[in-house]
Amino acid sequence: MEKEKLIIMKGIRKKFGAVVALDGVDFDVGHGEVVGLVGDNGAGKSTLVKILTGVYQPDEGEILLDGKKVAFESPTEARNAGIEAVHQYGGVVDTLDIARNFFIGREIVRKWGPFKFLDLKKMREESLKMVKKVGIQLRSEDALAATLSGGQRQAISIGRAMYFKARLVILDEPTNHLSIKEVDTVLDFVREIKKQGTSVIFVTHNIYHVYDVADRLVVLDRAKKIAEFMKTEVTPEDVIDTIRYGTVSRKSLRKE
Ligand SMILES: Nc1ncnc2c1ncn2[C@@H]1O[C@H](COP(=O)(O)OP(=O)(O)OP(=O)(O)O)[C@@H](O)[C@H]1O
Ligand SMILES: [Mg+2]
Image 1: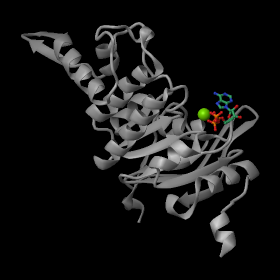
Image 2: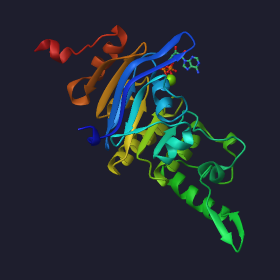
Image 3: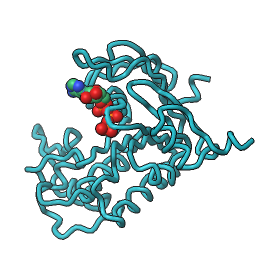
Image 4: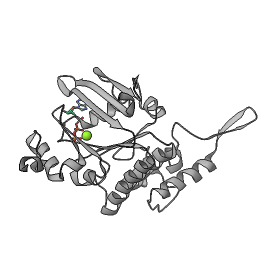
């Protein structure tokens, strides 16, 4: 049973000083499944996904990847295991251009005799191809990341996740501050990578955005998981009410 899941997090606990950010949370993601992770400000959503991407280590609990115990000490370790995070502002370095950001830490290197050098031409071609595939228009292909919009920055990390064939992509508030068209692009991207068999965790305050693409919705409330719904069992309003009242709300069930 456990092998059928890509990721299983068990009894995850995390404190920051006196603040309990996660109080024994169980959370899992299936293969090719899109899980919406929702809940109010400070519920612990970002902390949970940062534990999964190696940004933080849990105080207690364990993580299984394909049924095997893992412990990520850094985002690089998580990335090497196929777990990619797409940050709200794209997780890109302002002073680098698109190509260098795209391949950061995984540069294409060419060998010439005893020498190794970066294959800038190939990196430029490959990265621009992927960023364009994500559907974002660029005004300049050589722009530094500092001059890009939120959607363009995100397109870099989205394209990167696709290029490196991530097994799990984590999007934390991916639609915040995006234009309507850019939101559609992000939602299309989620559908697209799901088709490729990639799993997705989609963290958001916008229940309508996540409802569109999720298979399952998990609600955190003050460091605890309080509800888990298959999307087909609930309406977006049920999910919103569950967050609002801090307890499972399902109008469809109450009618039965
Ligand atoms: N690095 C940190 N140092 C101290 N406290 C932290 C840190 N990161 C998170 N916290 C605290 O842990 C709790 C959970 O925060 P977290 O960012 O995980 O919530 P969230 O659900 O992502 O909220 P939001 O919807 O506002 O992004 C909060 O009380 C927050 O203040
Ligand atoms: Mg957060």
